[in-house]
Length: 138
Image 1 (cartoon, rainbow, N blue to C red):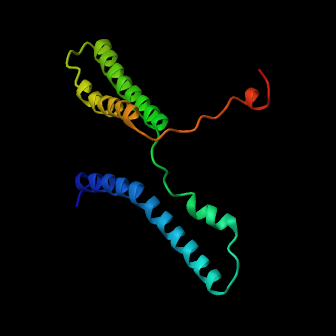
Image 2 (cartoon, rainbow, N blue to C red):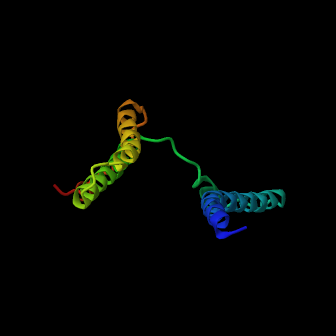
Image 3 (cartoon, rainbow, N blue to C red):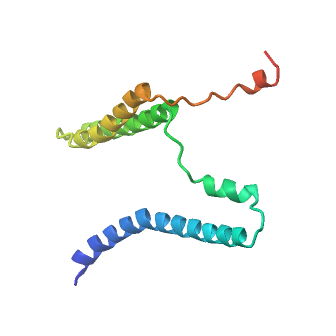
C-alpha cells in the first residue's frame, strides 16, 4: 500500500471523523445525563431546573422566517464569492474556461431556495426591541 492509496483513504477518514464524532460525543453526553437524572428520580431527589434546562437546550426549534432568510443570504454570498473568485482568477491569468461558475451555482441555488422558503415559512420569530425603547427612551 503506497501513499497513492493511503492519502485518499486518510482524507475520507478525516471527513467521516469530523462529521460523525461530534454526534457520537453529544449522544454519549445525553445518555450520561439521562442516566444521572434517572438515578436521582429513583432515589426521590428533586430535579433542579438547571438540569432540565440543560437537557432541553439541545432540542432544535423549528426554523423561523428570519433564520431562513439569513441562511439564504449567507449561501447566496458564498456562491457569489466563488463566482467572483473564478471570474477574476481566470481574467487575471488569461484563461477563458470559467470552470468555477458551475460549482458556484450550487450555493447560489441553495441560497435562493432558503430565501424563497423564508416567504412561505409560517413560523415568525419574535422581534427583540431596541434597548433604548425598552428602557423608556425615544
